[in-house]
Image 1 (tube, rainbow, N blue to C red):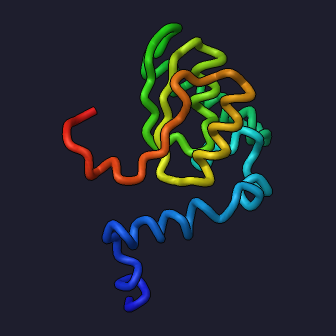
Image 2: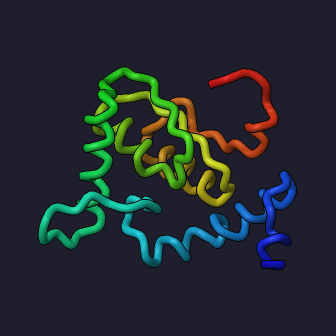
Image 3: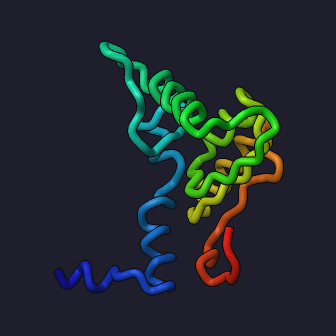
Length: 136
């Protein structure tokens, strides 16, 4: 209980908590995630075992459910390593802006999408977004 108290999410502590969880290093996550680097559940077909195919199926289902189409501008909040952003830009033709709170994920996503020519504008890192006025 005391350990949890020490890790409560003040602005300073939230930055530390993010770093402790998401910034463990991309090599750590790439050791057990597939090449999409997607850190959420996949959409498997019965009997399917290929994680990358199941993640791509999830991307396709998300795109269909949201109705995004070529030329749409998409804001992905919590874009992580940029897997869905790359898919939406490359496969559908969307213009994607990704937001992430992790420096490691940001650096990876920027490199990945730069190589693929997938994003315009490039992904943004968003520490302190909650301190800005206005709305999205």
